[in-house]
Image (cartoon, rainbow, N blue to C red; front, side):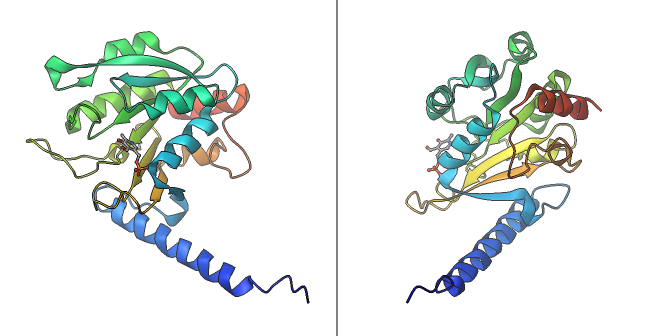
Length: 232
Ligand SMILES: Cc1ncc(COP(=O)(O)O)c(C=O)c1O
């Protein structure tokens, strides 16, 4: 006999389990932030790679471009292209510990730029940015009216003297989309648990409906609203 609710118990249990994971991730990431993340800020993904893919897909509205570091983890360029999201590269400066060329970012951005990506700790350069440099990046993104996408898959795997500072610390300057997973820090690359977290204590992404499940940043009107909210 066909019984449509035969999987009800299993599905309910797996939803509860997912809620537990989101609560655990929100708690864990909040330890390093000046505010508390809610489990609703956390979206589970299949490793960090799917978090990257979803982010680029959501940002890929017609004509949009994204700013990527050079050198960069190569999947960003490939996934942006496969989602028809145009890519512009800003330089990382070797003489300055692979810091972002802020002036280069300002010169590259235009009204179709939706976000800039920061990989910290960096792959492939191994750099760990200071609090001061990350703040400067956040201020630049705010000035340009774009999102900061922070790939922190190597969070806390920092070598050298700089401690790891999450970009979400500057979430009140500019909304940050934090991408991560358990694969690197816990040395479990085969356990495909990742996350996409909105580090946005002012709720700008919600107000501009960027994170509404049924919508993406896919109209110039939404982009305009987001821009206005970031600039407020
Ligand atoms: C910078 C960066 N982001 C994301 C990923 C993908 O991480 P995951 O293995 O969790 O999918 C990698 C993997 O090497 C990486 O180096």
